[in-house]
Image (tube, rainbow, N blue to C red; front, side, top):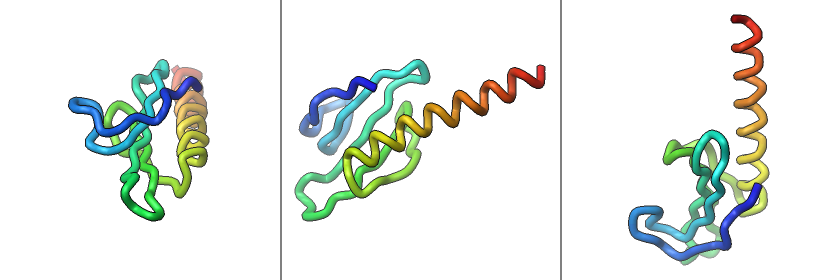
Length: 81
């Protein structure tokens, strides 16, 4: 996955520091509050909250897992048709 470099809050994108990645399912975004000593990293797909992680790298790994699980679920669904 090709993530953007971390960006500061950006109007219309995120109120917090963030990085994004375009996927076949839409935009994936990880946000965090950089002013905190130990921020959580919130994962979103198309602005729908998915989960959180304790590190940016962990959040990116979770994004990949989410895509893989979604693909597997779609494969199963389509196989039943």
